[in-house]
Image (cartoon, rainbow, N blue to C red):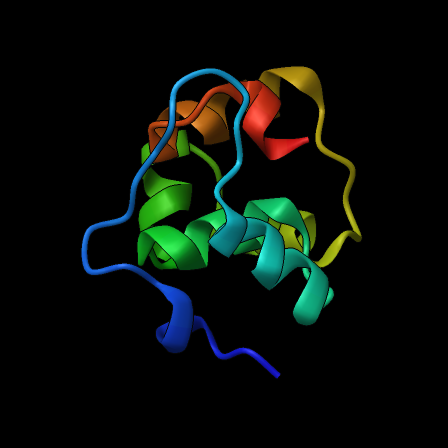
Length: 91
């Protein structure tokens, strides 16, 4: 199993467009986690940091990351902006 610390680059790279780095895809597949959580871990951010930046609660973000709550378009856009991503990268 791949651990996040093993594949996270020293400085995460956020590509242009809708491209998703191999490291993020690897986290998604190997650990069976959502792209939202995979991106957050890849970027080295906490749930609290992302939630605060996006203007949502940490509990709501936790539900979204677990797949319990569906991401609405507006929320996906807020989360993407909070992490410096394009919304398409969170799909």
